Length: 220
Ligand code: CDP
Ligand code: CDP
Image (cartoon, rainbow, N blue to C red):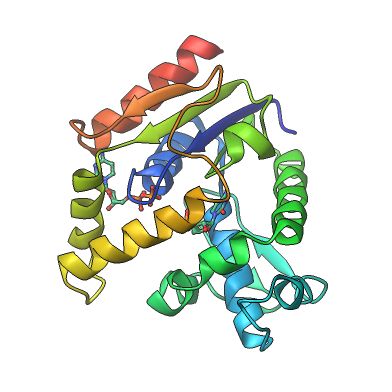
């Protein structure tokens, strides 16, 4: 792993991606969005025609999964093979199925290895890695470990403020259903031992970035 690893976990809409990216930019660190990898694998598995409800069928798409993700916070992109899927993986069609592939142990094990290789290869002083199981499974020995939370109301409000084309109520229901499904596989609602909780409910974006940087400064 690179010299400094900042591990950030949290539920959907807590601000993980946008805050982690801004923190990385400010500190000159690399940035790794692990949810993007799960999304890219879901996109790939669906195109490969696997049976999404069947774990063995989902895992059968792993050997043909050629994944790469840029770790420059200013130039984020995700590829599967030669195809740039940066935008495609944010579409509702992928968001709606990603939990089905993320629950398969072989998928989690393979992607965890990919994340560790990417972190080890970064040439910057540090890397911010964000997801659901970074503080507990991907990088439990990271120098800085943060759980970013926010009330359900705040998280749903933030997500429906983004232009999805769906009503606030539909966005809220989808978000809750995904968090419920993901929670059965990984606990990202409670801080593990040694993990600092940053509650962003009452913080605006810049204040949240500052709060995470303050945790980093305290731990380094
Ligand atoms: O940004 P958002 O919270 O919508 O989700 P994401 O971080 O892009 O993650 C998409 C999905 O990937 C989650 O709903 C989980 O099913 C899965 N995931 C995971 O299982 N473990 C991670 N470390 C990151 C994401
Ligand atoms: O990755 P995750 O699903 O945890 O959240 P995100 O996609 O980074 O953030 C969802 C939205 O919340 C973004 O539009 C952020 O700018 C916004 N946000 C906010 O309004 N206030 C905060 N304190 C943190 C994030």
